[in-house]
Image 1 (tube, rainbow, N blue to C red):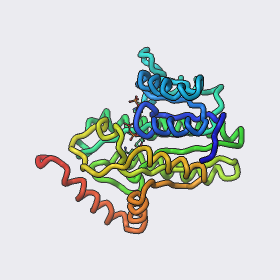
Image 2: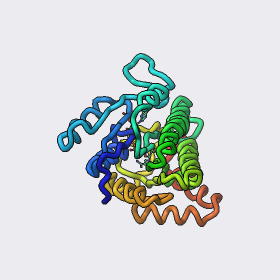
Image 3: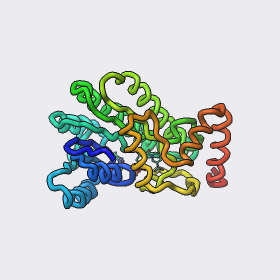
Length: 271
Ligand SMILES: NC(=O)c1ccc[n+]([C@@H]2O[C@H](COP(=O)([O-])OP(=O)(O)OC[C@H]3O[C@@H](n4cnc5c(N)ncnc54)[C@H](OP(=O)(O)O)[C@@H]3O)[C@@H](O)[C@H]2O)c1
């Protein structure tokens, strides 16, 4: 793959899963990294692991992206993170941090639905605006936003999550048009179920379906290739591509009913 030596990549949600794997693979391609998440100890572990290969190449910033400013808990808020990044040139931005929920809409604590909106929608938008301004000024960059296969259609019992991922997908595709001619690649990553901490962390008012999950290394490898080729959308793996094909060509009423029946089977009987 292309050598990205000397480029700086900003990765949100780098303490686990897809974000951490982007950090590993982009670092192995030569990137310097700015990694952020709430769990600083995880970021430091990652820094130690990667800097064995290249010293002084990883900067860690502990931040809670659902907060505007710090609560005095050693975590920066969104505004402070943006000020911290002001003087750092960012060549690649992986807008990845996100959370989900599963269950009947009214049974999921509203605080959690709120977090999905604050993190998946508000924070991703604020950070994208900030970074794209920088990239436009330097007339170069690569922007990859992590949406989901769930972004292509409404998912009953994942209503807020799938709506947030549709937001990520549509916003990214619209930005792609706006940024043509600026030498900035813009890609929406739409993974299917992937083996990460996502399902353990998600607020679950019901057990999610036990689907076979893709390996995070394969998902990220295919995504980086797509980003380097400036592909609009990447749905990693043959299953991902098949799912996207199906949901693109069937009416939403049919795919929503099908998903609702499938996911509804996972609800507790009393639910
Ligand atoms: N896994 C899947 O099946 C799947 C499928 C499609 C799309 N996706 C998308 O992929 C992205 C990454 O998810 P993942 O699967 O890698 O899950 P994950 O392992 O749970 O990683 C989520 C990351 O987001 C960070 N994060 C969560 N809340 C945060 C907050 N308030 N402030 C700052 N960072 C926060 C977490 O770090 P801290 O907890 O340390 O803050 C963690 O690094 C998400 O956008 C998700 O929607 C996942």
